[in-house]
Image (spheres, rainbow, N blue to C red):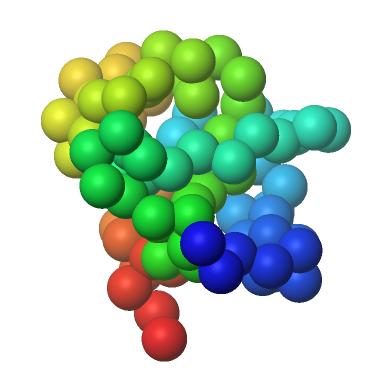
Length: 89
């Protein structure tokens, strides 16, 4: 649990203030845990991306790699961008 407000700002900037999943422009993004907290995911920089309320609610506690690929807006390019962000040091 070490995710700071500065990291959140950088995260939103990295994704151009858009939902990391569907690409919707966000005024009030939610923090989505790529690996759900209920499944051992942490409240850390390498587990949080900005998401619209709709995507965050639909994903709920489903793992990113399963949920995202089943979405009509799935994009290999966006998936790569998400993974790059999460794995960057």
